[in-house]
Image (cartoon, rainbow, N blue to C red; front, side, top):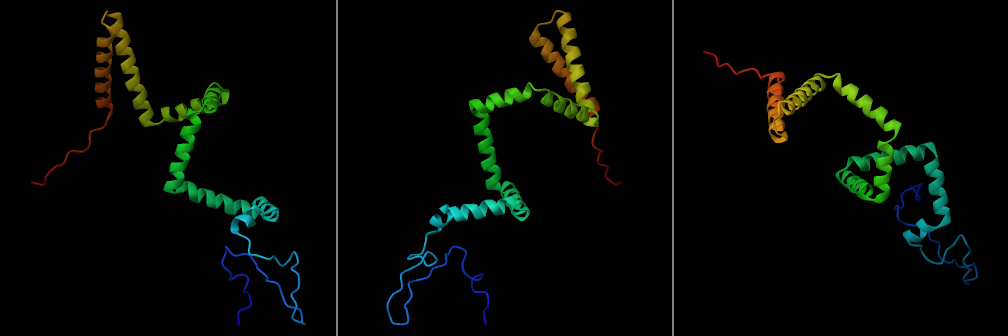
Length: 180
């Protein structure tokens, strides 16, 4: 015996009650509880009652958690990532996006965040090596310009010096030794 028939109904159906007969065989007029026809899913979603219930659910703790889970799942999917990338690119290309980004980059908040990121990177071995390579490139370029070389030659000399410094700082992988 099935007790909970309403829970077993498909999700896209809406309760429907046809006109009923009275005991004498005549039709009773439908009441607001008894609609004449089955509503479409779109009509149900657009109804005020449905919007009120959705808003109430979204405001509840259970609803907030469910919505956050669904959003995280979507954003983790390939389609979600692609959609977000397209919308971010579209926003950044817009006038409003450009103004917002420029305003943020001029703010103290951005400067502080940038300084924290740089300090964190500079403390790592990779950051220290990167800093040494840049220092070598810059000093070699400045010295070449002082010596009277053209900018093009100075840049080439600086790149060669930076490449040598990078090779010096990059550890060589262990050589393969064959057993003899």
